[in-house]
Amino acid sequence: MGGDLAGRHHVCSRRCAHGFLPPFRRSAEPAYGHARRRRPRAGPRGRQLVGGIGRSGRRTAPQPGCAHRAVGRPRTVDRGDLRHRTARSRDRRALPGSRRPSRRADGAAHRVGRGGRTQPDHRARRGGAGADVDERTVSDRGVRSAADHRAGHRRNCIDNRLDQHVVRATPDGQHVTARLLVRGGHVFDPIGGTAGPADVVVEGARIVDVGVGLDGDTAIDATGRLVVPGFIDCHVHVLLDDVDTLRLLQTPLSLRFFQAARNLRLTLRAGVTTIRDAAGADLGVKQALAAGLIDGPDMQIAIGMLSQTGGHGDEWLPTGECVHALWPPYPGRPSTVVDGVDEMRRAVRELVRAGADVIKVATTGGVISPRSDPRRAQLAEEELAVMMAEARAAHLHVMAHAQGAQGVKNAVRAGVRSIEHGVYLDDEAVDMMVKNGTWLVPTLSAPHAILRQADTSGGIADSTREKAAAALEAHEASVRLAHAAGVRIAMGTDAGISRHGENLRELELMNRLGISAVDALRAASTAAAELLDAGADIGELCPGKRADMVILEGPEISVEQLPERVRTVIHRGTVVA
Image: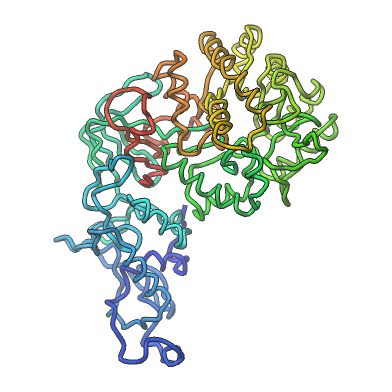
C-alpha cells in the first residue's frame, strides 16, 4: 500500500531515524536558548535513505546484505535536529529489555520494529498472556504493551500503512517482504467445521501457503492453540460509546471522533478485523483508517439510517425538541428522516454521494427511540421500492433495522440484503427470509447492554428500559426459530450500545441458544464475509486471502470465554495485539 518509499523520504525518515543516525554527542556549546539556535548545524539533517534521494539531493544505493544501512560515512548530527530528538524520545519510551538490533554473521540486520527496536518476547494481555514471537520482530509495529501502544499513537502513523511489513535483504542486495510463519497451530476451516495441525505463511498482507512443515523468516509459535480467521462484526456504531442520552448531549462532536478512534482500536485488538458500521461513522473515519492515521479494522459504512418522521431514526422528543443526541448533524452528513418517494430518492442519492458502502433503513420502530414501537411497521411499500431501485442503481446492498414481524416482511419483500435484530419474528417472516436468501444479524448483545446501562446510568429513559426488557425473551425465541428454519445468520453486536472490544461475547450468546460453536464461528467468518460481499478476500485461512487471523488459547473449537482466549491478532499480515 505504501508505493515507492524512495519518493516519500519525508515520511519514512521518522521510522528510519533511529537506525540511521550516529550516536548522540553532547556539544560543548550551550544546549539551550538563543545560543543554541544560532549555532550552525554540523551536517545534513540526517543520513541518506537506502536506495533513495537524501536531502542533499545525492542518490544512494543499497548495500548487499544490509536491509537498513546508509551509504557513506556517518556525519555528526546536531542534537537539536528534529528527527534526532524524535529517535531519542522513542528510545526513552522503549520497553524494558528492548535493544538496538544486533548483527548476524552474514552482515544482515535482524528485523526491527518501529524506532529501530527489536521487540520483546512477551506480550502483556489479559492475565499476562502473550504471543510467543522469536527474537526478530514480525512487523514494524510489532507486539507492544498497552503503554507502548498508546505512545505509538502520538507519532506520525502514516508509515504504518506505507511500510508495515518486515523487509529482508537477499544475498544480491535485493529487498523482499519477509515470510511470517504461524507455526504449529490448529487451523480452523469454517467450511468443513474442523481444525487440524498446520502452518500458515504470510507475505505482506496475504496468506501464501497453508500446510505442514513450512518455513519463514520470522515465526509465531501457535502450538496447542486454535488459529481462526479474523472475526467480522456486521453491525457496530463506532461513534457511540453507549446510549446514555444525558451524557451524549454533553459530549462535543469533535470528541466523539477521538472516541471512535479508541473504539476502533479496541475492536481490532479484540480480534475483529472487519466491521460494518451501521450508522454514525462517515467517509472521513474510513479514510483515516486507510491512510494509517488511526488503527482499526477494515470497515464498510452506512453513514446514516433512513427513517420516516416519528420513526426509529427521528430524535424528536415529547418536549417538542429534536436533540440529535445519537446522530448529531454536521457538514457532509445527509439528513435521513424522509417522507414520500421523492424525499427517499434524494436521501439515498445523498448517502451514495457521501460515500456509503451500504444503505440502512428502519422498517420498524426501535427500543431506544422514545416515540416508536418496535412491533409496528414503518415506511410505505412505495417508499421502500424507490429506495431499493436507487440502491441497486448504485450497486449497493440494503440492511434493514427491523424488529416487528410485519416490518421484517415488508423489508424482505422489498429485497433487502439483511434483517438487523429480528426481535419479533413469526413463521411467515422466517419462511420468507429462507425463500429470499435474506440474512439475519441478530445483535443479541444489544438488549442485555441496554438493561445493564439502565441499572448503572441515569441517562436511560424508562421507556427504553421497558422495551428492552420486553424484547429480551422474544429476541432469543426468534433467533432459535430462524436458526432451526435455516435462515442464514451473520454476527453483529450493535457495539456502541454494547461495549466496544467485547464483540466476541455475541458468539457466546448465540451458543447458549443452541447454535453450535462451529456455526457461531462461521457466522463471524465465512458467513459474515459473504454477507458483506467480501468472501473472495476474507473469512478463511487459505492462500490468496488477506492475512487476518486470531490465535486463541487452547486447540478446542469452542466459543466459551472467547474474549479471554484471544492470544494474538494479525491484521493484513501485521501483528496488532
